Length: 50
Image 1 (cartoon, rainbow, N blue to C red):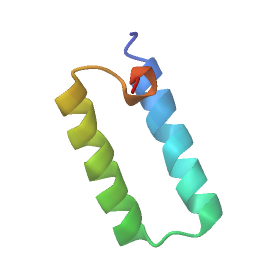
Image 2: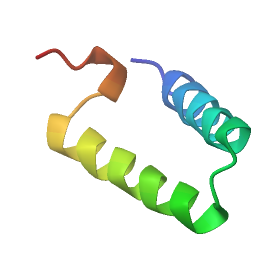
Image 3: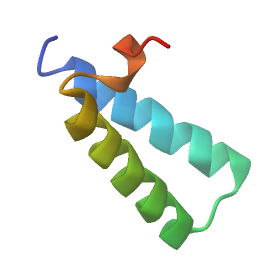
Image 4: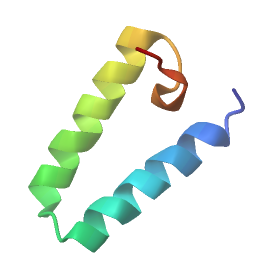
C-alpha cells in the first residue's frame, strides 16, 4: 500500500461524512474508530475481508 493510498481513503471518508451532514465531533470519533481498526488489521481497511 502506498503512502498516498491511506490519505486518499481518509479524504474520501471525510467527504462522505461531510455530505451526510455529520457533526465535527462525530467525524472525529469515526476517524478515531477507523484509525483503531486500521491498527488492529495491520493494513488499510479497504483490504479487509470477512
